[in-house]
Image (cartoon, rainbow, N blue to C red):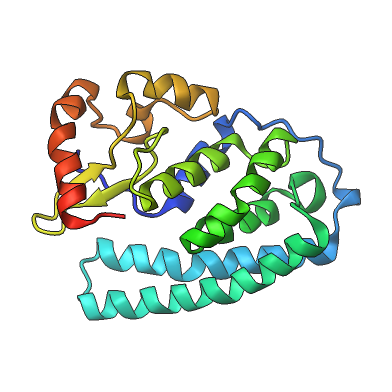
Length: 222
C-alpha cells in the first residue's frame, strides 16, 4: 500500500456524497446566516494551511518548512476550537439544515482535528447528530476510527493510515475483522476500500497485519 491518507478532510470530501445520512431537507431561507458565515470562515481557516501543508509534503519541501506550516495549522486549530465549543454550547450541533453543508462540515472538521480528550468529549454529540440526521454517517465513522487509533485500538472503517518512521513505508492502521470491512463501510455510506485506496488488497493486508501491528507497537504510532 503506497498511498498514505493522513489528511482526513480529503476522506470527508470524497465520501460525503455516498454517506448513509445524505438526505437533508434544506431550506436556505431558514439558515442562521450569522452562524453560517462564522462557520464558513472557520472552515476556510481550517483548510488553508492544511492544504498548504499537504502540498509541501507532496513537493518534498524541507522538514523545517513543513513543520513551520504545520505549527501554524495547529495554532489555527486551537483558535477554531474555542469558537466551535462556544457555538455548540450555545446552539447545539448545527446540521446542513441549520447552516448549510459547508458550514456544518466546518463544525465537524474542527472537532476531528482537535486533541483526543476533545474528540472523546464530543463523540456522543456527533453520534446523536448522526442519529438525528444532522451530520454525515461517514463523519461519525472517521471520528470513531481516529479515536480508536489514538487510544491504541483497532479501527473499524479503515480511514486511518500511518507511515513507518524508519522506512517511510505507508500502511493502513490495523483494522478489526478486515473481512467485514467493506460491509461496515457500506453501512456508514462509505465507498469500498478499493475506491478509497486503489491498490488495496485484502488478502495481502491480512498477511501483513501482524507486521503492521508490530510496527504500531514498536513505534508507538497514534
